[in-house]
Image 1 (cartoon, rainbow, N blue to C red):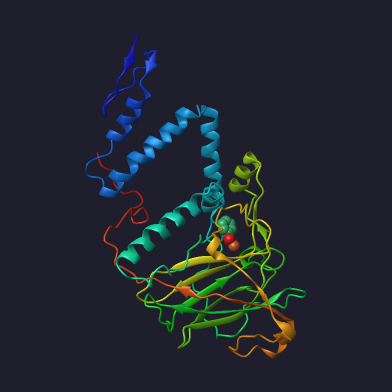
Image 2 (image 1 turned 45 degrees about the vertical axis):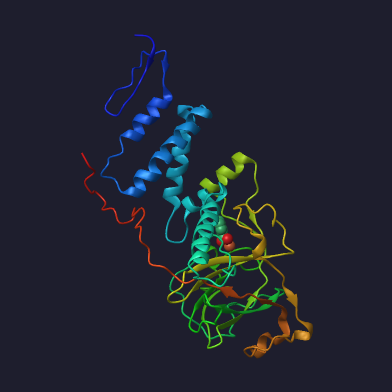
Length: 343
Ligand code: BEZ
Ligand code: FE
């Protein structure tokens, strides 16, 4: 049989047709979505299916390439555990985690401004979480160090700042999680020879909304490139390096949690971060401290670290007031394993 063939949900593909109508084929896949699916699924999945089909058609993807892509994702799943998320890394090298972060910030800050849930234009900018956040770290006293093993020749830095609410008032009792790489470019989870929580700590802000610690000036490092994400980088002829940065996770009751990073202005890779996370507003300066004395009075520096302090870094955060979520969105985690699909 010759000619073109049309599709609607419930029709088969006419394999004899000379010219299969691919748009109608895509349409039939979209039309298969049930009216019982949630509003979010009914809105997002047609876009997903159309763009995915468009890519396959436009790039003329072969069966071999498709299977190789599936194998890459299978490998990512196999090496993922509670210390490492290869799927997030895959999304990172394709710029997806940063894109989602950019959209989330735009969406939530515009809504917050409109509803006066943030002091005008002052919401601190977010950045991607990355794979090395750790839940449940014990709060430690302000002024104490997160460097759990002495690092010879490292640039010790007094890091401090205040956390403000949506009206610009300091928040007491906000938690501030901080983590960065050690001078060898590794996070604690990547180096079992280092003490637990090396270069990682959690603080609670005082009555002035202030947190303070002693950390190190971080160094650029390569993201893990020994599995799927590394293969993608190789395919694209790209390097795996990130510019030197410090991560933050700030939480305060009644406020939207802020996940962010700050980037050292003097670091390499600011313009070619392997995961595309650098925002201008997050580029900061490490200010040299003269003669081991911090210019900004704060908590007392532990005696054994006085002589090694080289820099200080002030980083304040402005949070937005939280709103309760009306749209439950895609509750993928909530789906029962082995749950009955619709018939
Ligand atoms: C990080 O900054 O820790 C990171 C972010 C994305 C991918 C890998 C590492
Ligand atoms: Fe990092």
